[in-house]
Amino acid sequence: MSVAVYDAVYRGGTVITVNQNEDIADWVAVKDGKIAAVGAAGDEPKANETVELEGAVLLPGLYDAHCHIMPTGFFLDSVNLLETKSVGEVLRLLEKRCAQAGKGEWVFGAGFMAQNMQEGRFPNRFELDSVSGDHPVLLTAQTLHGGTLNTIGLRHIRLPDVAGVGRDADGSPDGTLLSDDAFFSSMSQVMALLPKDKLKAFIANCADYARKKGVTSIVGLLGQFVDGDTDVEIVERDRAEFPVNIVTFYQTWDFEKIKKYNLPRIGGCLTLDGAGFEYTMALQNVYPDRPERRGFLIHTDEEIYTLISRAHREGIQTAFHALGDRAIDQLLFVFRQVIGEQGNKDLRHRVEHFSLPWDIHMDMLAEMKLVASMQPAFTGLWGEPEKGYYDLLLGRERASRMEVFPEILKRGGIVCGGSDSPVTLVDPLYGIACCIANPDPRRNISVHDALKIFTLNAAYSVHQDGQKGSVEVGKDADFTVIDRNPYDCAGREEICGMRTLMTVKDAKITFRA
Image (cartoon, rainbow, N blue to C red; front, side, top):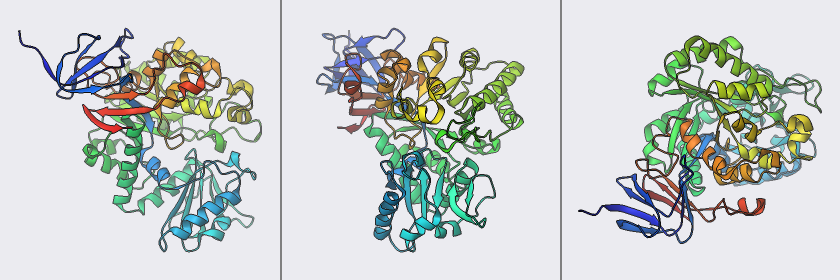
């Protein structure tokens, strides 16, 4: 009897398969880019190459199921404002970059958060002008739902006449862009001014960063942030050049655009409401410290129905951004109407964020077999049970209802995990940690369920669960090797210390620590 010889065997560690039986193995063998065998110690097969895990842990290749690829590369290329605490500090950092930039070159600042500022606001164009010299400047919020342009920057675009365009006492634009309509239009015009090789470099930077974080597949939210949707064109044309598998969600309301690329899905982060930190997330009740505001519903039921109904009829998957309870309510009842009229076709329509659901929303999600595409890192950064950002923004009662993973799973809902990068940068291991040892223990779920969110469920959310998401024979040889076993970690500090040692995509090692 002939003995099977494989291309490679990964051995000498722990293999967490994330399969239905939650099996743990000792080795996995690969042939022709696929998983060919999985087994126990003492039964290792022959292979042309042996990869010693040296006690490390092998997982299915990790996903980021919600990533703004081009804006992530933009963030990595910008002045990082995440740690700034005052407008003055922001201006000093931007002034330093302007001094280093070439004549007339755009200067970008990213990661700004008004809630961190002593002044509690965005800088205006006049303040940016004081440090920018001859440079156009664009500053973006950490949420990507707001920003500021300096005076030179404003001259490069057609400023939209919409809510959220800040104005000074005499009615002139002050450079601040504090709504989706105001900011998205402005940023997309700025990005379209950049050469295509710069935009491709942004995408490559994101992919490079992701592979170092153990990511083998990204659900990329493309379009919307570049006039002309050049980022979609680049990814669809050059996807083989990037070190991660990119699944395109084309963020457009124009159904004809997806046909150019023969895409089986439309949407992504098509915003039905805004973001909490800009007070545009649509709530049923007002914000405690902004009692005049409860956010916006950006689209009518009819607009949403028209797109979903056509997509469902034609077998196309959809996804929409719905953060607040009012936006979630709007979207789910439209889905209910469409599915009631046409039947459930296993299209796995997605609700992006699903941050503040009521019980009825969680039941409807499970009933209609929709997927909640969520970002556990949000809860790690902002979900402290006492005096965290969610508490300050929403009040304790609503903060306790934000991103309640155990409740969604208990009701039969399916959750997949992403980062919303660059809102939080790509880091699925941190997302997994936030599901296992959350600052608020009411959000904790099992290790197996946490791993599934960033592997098998994420693959399921884009119809790839037959190829990826678990270590099983016949699936793609996509692996993430990490330095410790999440089942054995004790406490938040240890689980949050997990790091990537190796990333393997299609049986090729794309990263070694």
